[in-house]
Image (tube, rainbow, N blue to C red; front, side, top):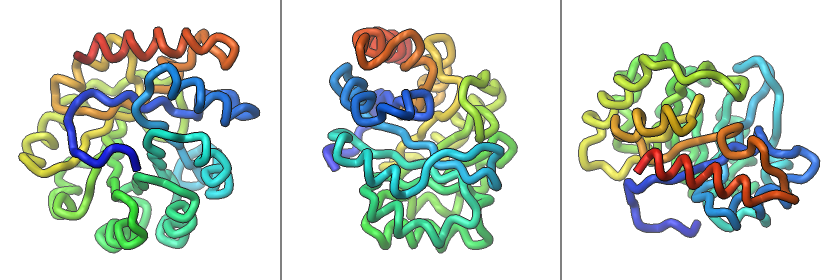
Length: 229
């Protein structure tokens, strides 16, 4: 994994949910060439969330194209039986939801046991206290600022206060705070000020561009980064 030193600098993580599904390799090479920091992979099972996307085989297929960080967000339940497969597919981070199984502490242990950085995800209605006893065994907290399952939603404003509380709870622990949902140039400064450092963006990165016009991706990411910084 390229990033070995923990930093709280702004990291833009385009979600390939908004990319051209028939052209993932070229799309990933394009966003990385245009300056993305991480590549975010939204895995949905049609059960835990009302949509169906990718499995471990897709992750394995795109891994050779990812030179930055492969950030895999599992919106699936049960999650534990699939952790090893996603780890073997090359994930650098694997995030699971608090509600994805009865023993989320064990889930975090399982992710780290596979040699992968562990993330815990909070749905909009999940209180920040749900991660209090997990903070010493996670590397990332994904704050869902929309209800998971679909791209293109508006950021839920109440989640900004949640990020502030989470940042205070984390203290000096080397834990990333990731924002997933509704990130655009108007919302990114708000969640950045609250303490987040990783920003998942789908349409805000991919809108208007293509592998034939990748400079649009670059312009979109520069606007996001400038607004955050």
